[in-house]
Length: 335
Image 1 (cartoon, rainbow, N blue to C red):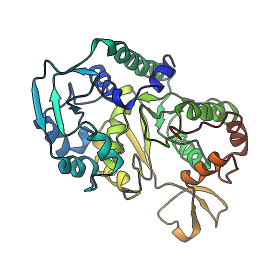
Image 2 (image 1 turned 45 degrees about the vertical axis):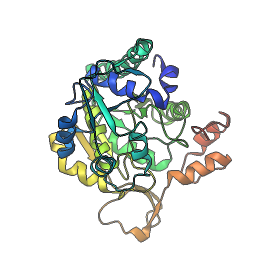
Image 3 (image 1 turned 30 degrees about the vertical axis):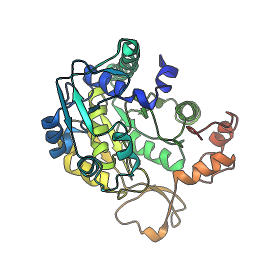
């Protein structure tokens, strides 16, 4: 995709330019601008409207001379209503309140950032064009979001999605990430290797430029709305979607999506995670009758440790790991 490196180098200070670009492009559904206080509470009351996009004061990328409205929201309200936690030290809450709890409607990006806004819009437009081309070929297209190099559990989930649609686009959220998240270039190379060597090009890798909020269940709905807006027919959501620091019940996003999936205009497939079944001696998607005592969790965190040490993980393709370890040593952000 064009401008990949420029998108990949967007800093945390520039994250609101991403929200601004996506609002203007219309892929932040139901929001025509950064939200005012009344709009914030409207979205909070209805999770199927996604996540409220707010612009804090004092971000150096914006000119605030023409603010139409300035308002404050108590930190504990943001923490509880968006992130469903009282922990103000949670990474999602801290990121959201990095510039304080006072917000503005009507500010515009400074002139020197207009080019970056256009690059973000062009980047996501390339994704839309790719999806439209596949649709013209008569294909249904599923989105698989991940922040991790694929282990065999991820592959099982992709295969489940391929049972429902003709082509899967691995569609991570591309934007500023927390320290320790996988570098986007490594993620890209990993899935391209899998597609070429094992999936006969039935999967492809094309991110969407959007912000991660680490808002768990509510963000799962937000992600489904994003995929609907760019044209996907299917989106798959599993265990602990968009969570961090083990703060959410692993199945909380699934339960919320089950409640709203008929109202958001995209086929949402939910699953309870992939595991190694000791009884069946294979990787499976967990079903209601599977006993926890029979299942061995395939943890992305375990795979990460192997990657850091360049050792081999039993639940990932050996060929992929061999390829990974030819790519150097910088696999993670600020790591």
